[in-house]
Image 1 (cartoon, rainbow, N blue to C red):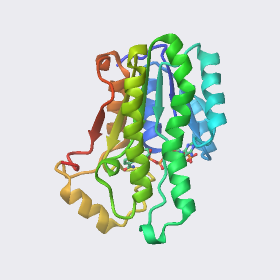
Image 2 (image 1 turned 45 degrees about the horizontal axis):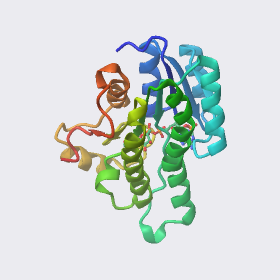
Image 3 (image 1 turned 60 degrees about the vertical axis):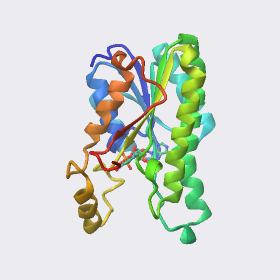
Image 4 (image 1 turned 60 degrees about the horizontal axis):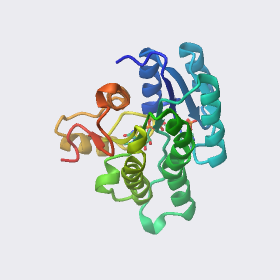
Length: 242
Ligand code: NAP
């Protein structure tokens, strides 16, 4: 896919799925900007290797989102693609879940999507074109014991996306969700080996995904090949949610 000269912004671009998305867009010729919260070394490495611009900005911060988007538009003249990828987990059964576990997850995973989509709305509207892709999860579709905060945030992204797709369609902007299953990243590296084996046993493809396998459909949804797709949830899970 060719994204030569396209301006792309990815939240949470320093590790895991976000990093794979940064790398694939850069390889496809895009001008890439990304955000991160604390992984400054990884950010510097990406900037050195790919020339991508890194912004240290908590995705939950509304004003910071506005500033990042304004800066990207000032630097590149436009914003063609926004990928809302930043996300965290604070797992626990509801009885033991602290209020802070709920707030942190909902703010980092769902409010962040509002923040960056809100900031991108005006520039994309002026361009009369744009792509917004948000990373949800099959947990947002199916639920998962011990992840009620995470599931709520990821389900919220889907409702938000469907509403925004209806709102922005007439402006030439598409809004979609990619919902991964089990992906090998730092987020899942802490799971016990037994749990990992149990999950793999029920995945029809009998393996987990690489971050690159999630990045590929994100690039597809950002490309001209996907120009008539909006408001959709693309599940990328090896068949786990079937
Ligand atoms: P990861 O390896 O933990 O990487 C998360 C990335 O997001 C890092 O670059 C991190 O930057 C950044 N980030 C986290 N919170 C942030 C915040 N508040 N502001 C800005 N950046 C922030 O996670 P991942 O597995 O790649 O997950 C990426 C997305 O995919 C998440 O939305 C996750 O929920 C979703 N997902 C993952 C899986 C999976 O199996 N891994 C499955 C379904 C969905 P810092 O290091 O600077 O904090």
